[in-house]
Image (cartoon, rainbow, N blue to C red; front, top):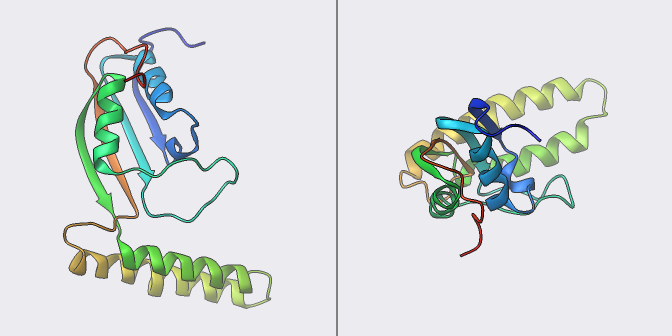
Length: 156
C-alpha cells in the first residue's frame, strides 16, 4: 500500500471504465495525493465494448462531477472529445482494419485511410455539427484534491 499524501499528481487515462468500484478507486487516488494534488484523467462516453469482461462503465459530465466530489476532488476542467461522427467512423475503421490487417499490402493503406479520412476528418466535422457535444466519445479533465480523502466515497 502506498503511503498517504505521497504524490503531487496522478494520471488516469482510459482506465476508470475498467474499475469495478470507481468511487473507491477515485477515493484511493485522493488518498495518495498531497493536498491540492492534481488528477488528470480521460474516460469514454460513446464506445464499443472492449477488454471484456472488464468493461464496466461509461461516463457523463454530471456523473464524473458527482464521483469526483464524493471522492474529495474539485473538478477544475472537463472537455468533451469527438462526437457521433467520430464514434461511427471509429466503428467503421475498426471493422475495416480487422478485415484487412493480415492481407499483405493492405495494412498500411487501411491504416492511412483510418488516420486521415476517417479519424481526423470526422473529428473535425464533429466540431462543426455537434457544438453542444451531446454525442462526445469521451471526456478529458483535471481535478484537484480539496481535503482529506473521504473513506466512504460511494456510500450515499
